Image (cartoon, rainbow, N blue to C red; front, side):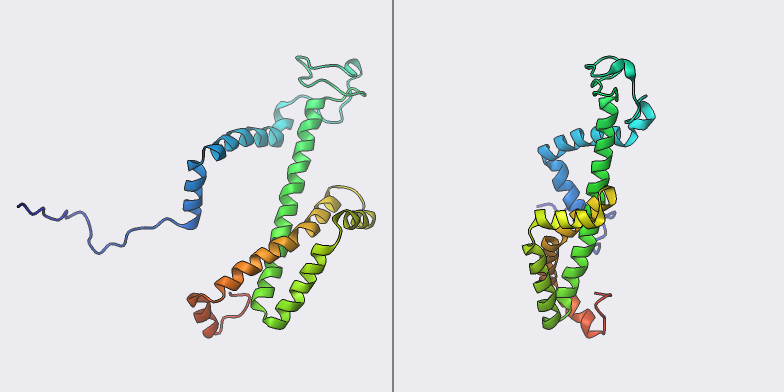
Amino acid sequence: MTITAPDPTVDPTAVPQTKGPLRRALDRFFENRAARAGLLIIVPILLAVSTYHLWWPFSPNAIDLRAINKGPSAIHWLGSDGVGRDVMARLMQGGRISLLVAVCSVAISIVIGFLVGAVASFGGRLVDGTVMRFVDLAMTLPPVIFLLVLASIAGTGIAPTILVISLLSWPVLSRMVRARLLELRERDFVVAARGMGAGLPHL
């Protein structure tokens, strides 16, 4: 029986490195074929929408009187509308506005939902009950009526649209954040931090 000598280049006291949550999430993402296919589709679209003004010769509101209601051609790839505006440019501009509204409304909803959920979960029973009743009230509002009221107050445009979508989206997220933080609140590291005097902003 032979005994293999230990490798001198390997430190027996070294702690094996573990992957962080972000690295594990990225590994799962790239292992999924559908996710990779979606990435190959969405990235060119995002690049085209974001940079179309650099490579496309027409602006969304430019009028070409010689190309009214024309079909696709070498000049106007997707044709033109009833007043001679390039459909390709208007499609790209519409996609840019849609992306702006989506990103901003999601970001605002995440901030509001996280703050409300954190206050409800760490604020005590009275604060939790009060905040969650307010969240329940916000979730029971009819979305269409709420949309019409806000639109009549704030008007039309990109900013009011972002505001309306954000105010309609945060209640569900706040309940999810609250449920997760209620679970984390009982973890040892949170209990230890609170025992050392850590306040709600620090937690």
